[in-house]
Image (cartoon, rainbow, N blue to C red; front, side, top):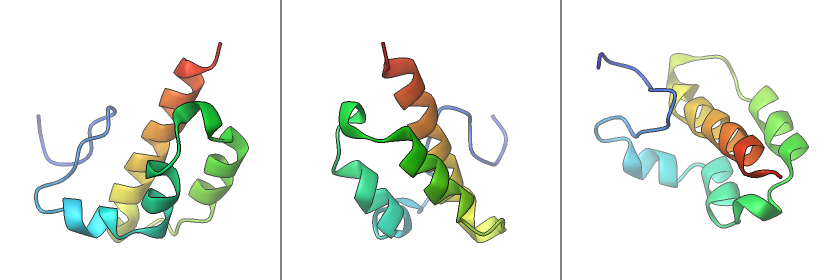
Length: 73
């Protein structure tokens, strides 16, 4: 696979530390998918600047959204 962020979230090389320090990652990584409010994640994603530096958190939040949708009965 080429460079970038696959649809099923994966960390970029060396990105683990940077992502784990992001407040949005911390917010959702400490919550079960069942307890996550989908509208909150969408609002948080909408508030992220559309820059190359934010691609990793955008990929993570998009993955949280997809997984939440898939896990909702």
